[in-house]
Length: 132
Image 1 (cartoon, rainbow, N blue to C red):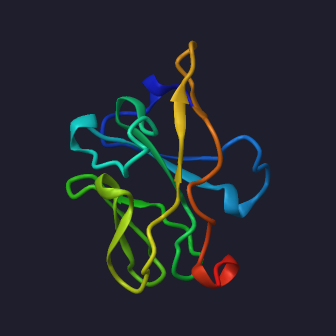
Image 2: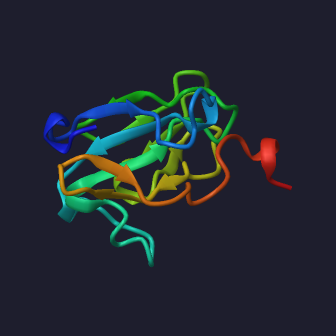
């Protein structure tokens, strides 16, 4: 995805390289004002210029988290109404999800494309899929 194609407070579903055809690989790319972000320690460079990518797979039951309320910077899961704070590490703020959405470290390449720099920060999907 070209960075210039993502408007401020816009959301785009993306499929990072290395996850072709994988439902687990779906992610949401959101663009916010960089000064509003509260990155986790060690992740200060994971969201260049306010572009941030989280897994699109809800950590509660695996539904697609694809609704975005730009005014509150909240990602919403339509299945069970879990809400995640985009500015604060996709921390759950409402609903049954108890775990934040995994973040994908990204970079802007020399041609202006947004590229993954590594794997998601945590296992993708509901806790019962891969966590003990």
